[in-house]
Length: 126
Image 1 (cartoon, rainbow, N blue to C red):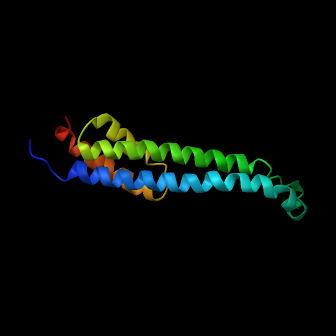
Image 2: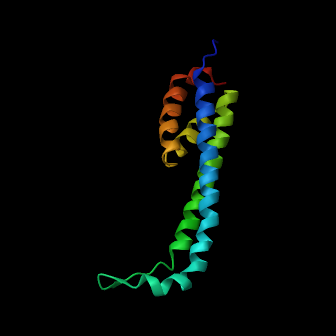
Image 3: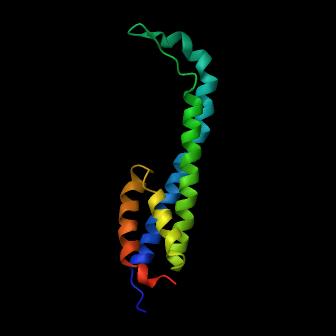
């Protein structure tokens, strides 16, 4: 079996996407509680927008949840990239590339390319 550059390149791109997802997710997970803590201090300045009360009390929980999702997707992408480099478990490698797609903007571009390279290099996997 001839070993080409496709699975290795896909693995590297998926690992980069996974690291990006873990980094951004960690930042958001850390930032989320800050909004919940700062809300009582910001409330007098927010006021009404067009007569509609502006309430950001739940935004910290939302940002924290997005951070946890980013970390989870990043870890799955990282594991998939490692298996793509080893040319083992094609399905897991493909899943890692697919879950990197929501990690905008880096994961989307690299995820699409990784999927293409993994599909073209499927025969190289054991």
